[in-house]
Image: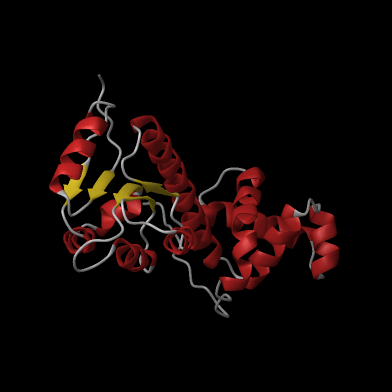
Length: 224
């Protein structure tokens, strides 16, 4: 069996649960990393921020001595972490599940759990992690655009032509072409379709994205 290289983490204060999950998941090709407390994982996560940014799946107990699963989830939500979180607990209730899902958890499962149901949730968590990384990358790229570039990108996403953009923004069609070319280079994209894809990702979050600075200084690459 080919072992996966994905990042899968287990957090539970019950060693027998960790052993059972580890055994079952290894049998499916995963290589999980186990922690017996939320504090232990949080400390490790802070020391390995790059791994958290890579994303993956976190199977997390809810009620544990010290830091709870919900507290860990909240701490992770305040970072650039892209993990998809699956709660697996023997002490959950509806309000607890609702709070966890509102904060972005993929699923809230009860122990004991059938392996097929757990594997489905793990797969969904990895998908959610991939989407989260793509969104965060898109937002970072969008934040680097000037106000004029943001206006142009919005109109391009609406299907406007260069000439229509020029008329709406009171600039020449040639200036529009220059802006488009510069945006492609700066975003390191090779097509209009990819820029439009970026805008469709960030559009639902525009109200929470900071306005651009009055001027953005960009480094000019010189060929030796």
